[in-house]
Image (cartoon, rainbow, N blue to C red; front, side, top):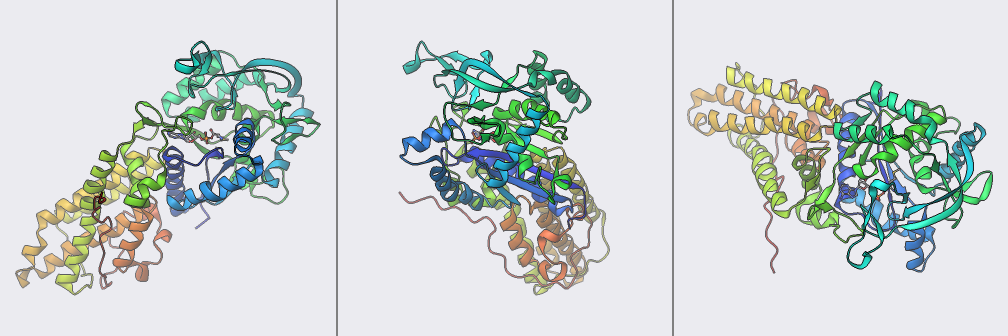
Length: 526
Ligand code: ME8
């Protein structure tokens, strides 16, 4: 399967100051669905996620908890971040931690190279720093504090006071790259997406870039600057490099050339780091810039970004314990246009679970399998002559397959799901209109009944394949129930872009009982 085009996709690496909430899980799921899609389409796919463990934020959290930053990071990775991947069914190829030796040594190599080539110099710096963002804040993101912070300057994102830092630092000559970056955005309009994100980035860079402080000397929790071990590398400079260190940058005999460049999925809060600083760093090192940086929207609570520091985070298990991981994966990608903000609500989640997953897809699968069991003793009938309505269903499945693939390539994940759902809706309508239960009453209609049920079953076969990146558990159950595992092999080996071709499930396959794919949710007893 790994012979197609190279496709390397990443999530941000997350801070281990706290446990994940559904905003982090949202990014993970989006990247995972796109990775699974490409993998199943035969592309040479690699998906990376991981944790960002250095810097002042982690150091302070560890100290406040009476432990060392490494012990704190180990604990959070083992108890919170890796379990998250299980909770939401992520199939990543690698997990990088910035405290991995493979990462730290390659960061030093990269930095030394920039230093040797004259892109780094030493200077004095004094500016307002946000530890939450781990960033010196530009004027546009500094606001006046309210409530307990009245009279102080606070970060527009974290609403917490900024700290005035004055240090002797090493600087990266980022200002050298203003023109080259603007040319990049111009020549490759899809380098930063969606369009709103691209415009924001262009506007920011047009104002001209300043050089970037890339080291800190007031604490030592970080990668040592190779030529001056009284400094550690600035946490963002260190973190961004994970995307290349994880695939073997600077090491012998690795997959670096095969994998790089990557598609980066990030929240819009960290767009500038990925679309401005990161390509400038890569240009300085003579490496390819990323294939694409996609900034998705925020999950909002009360109109504001859901966040750990504001205590508005919802733990993913609060949702998966009741609705399951498939519903979690589906809901956020279907309900929110990828690239825009969206508000989470339990009402909307329940309503979509019931209408789309249970009544729409789940019920379709149950009734088709039940009818094959009842009318054909569980053996998939051979189709007879197709009528226009059958051919129309085949056309719907083909079009949905092509449209979904186009949408995934453009990272319009919500559009891909809407396209696939046309199959669910059309097949449900087709069964209602064809009335197999009425056909079954007269043996003279046996051939027609066979054609209708074959069409429905092969439509379900296509749905299982197309939905497997989003609903891996439910589609696996359906696949087994259709008897497809025996005749066609593993679900995840089915070539995705070929899903729309009809008549793949052999007549004569045996279906088996299908338990509800999305069971009714009983309200918790108080
Ligand atoms: O920024 N809605 O890590 P982080 C949607 N370590 N997505 C959200 C979200 C929300 N309310 N809240 C968080 C960092 N996210 C750095 C990244 S990468 C080289 C270093 C997601 O733990 C979203 O993907 O603060 C956002 O970009 C990321 O979590 C920030 O995670």
